[in-house]
Length: 378
Image 1 (cartoon, rainbow, N blue to C red):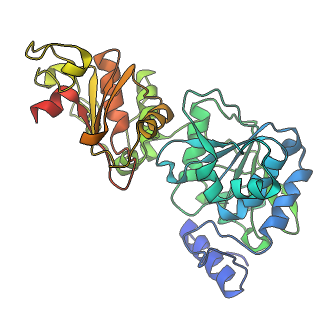
Image 2 (image 1 turned 90 degrees about the vertical axis):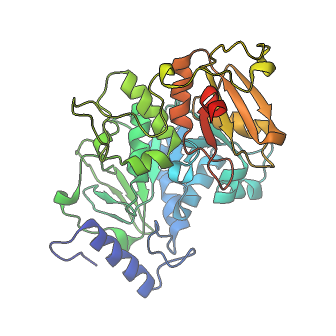
Image 3 (image 1 turned 30 degrees about the horizontal axis):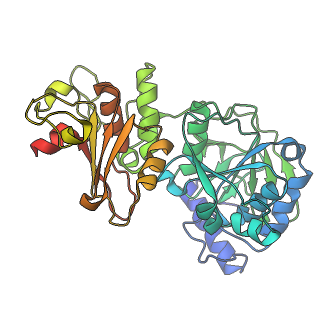
């Protein structure tokens, strides 16, 4: 099956999805449309990775959470490699380290390799963690023998790779492997490949192992001009990384971000630009901190977190904060009131936390985050 002339990426995706369904090549979950398709023979294709020297030598392996890659995740665990799996849609962080319980049986390891196991046996890895990934394994909808890759269209695999580059976890020499059905290996016009697209070095199918010899440079970091404000709102860890790169002097202007006439980008939604912009009222944790009420001392280094789930525990919030690299000096937990207060070293740290925590969820609803003084004023 080859794509027709003049096609777009979405055209190729639709052709692959339709063909796999019509030929009954797809496996659970179905239909495969709008997914990285699982296919019959995926476990067989995954077994071929054992024959790659780059996998045999690897100590740390990053494998996407897609169903057809389950076999690779299992092999990594069985080989006692460090297995890193991205958080689905990057909702709560970049990726998790899968840690099977001591003395795990084969059945437990199989469970650890599933999406349920990723949730049950994982530890979050923050942006500041010392991670050096030896092999990256990604899912694909389509891939060419030249190494061009097409995902399902949401851009998460490309973004994850770019974020790993930014945190120093991967480099140009880090091999990228994808595992697909033979029908997913098609000709892809190079004109469709963009600078932010990840390319692959090895393609594994149920019948072949292909070394692409791809010489096209991989992404060297995040292309912020390709990131929308909507995506920034959905991905807290991306906001944290953007703030870090902004402080390093990089251009982090977003795709659809309004600019001031001076050319400077506006602060992202929810960011307070300076402590002077907020009324100087005592916050509601003054008593908890030992500060006498009524002094009017501004506590600009405190962040209020509200709308906590009724069943939330302080450990849940601490874990989320560590994952974002936003752990405070101290935390005042007021669970019955469904709120907490985070105490940072200085106003700048509180402002940074305020920006990064926008959109954070511990349950179905987003948490309310504000400077503590601002919340008291409301």
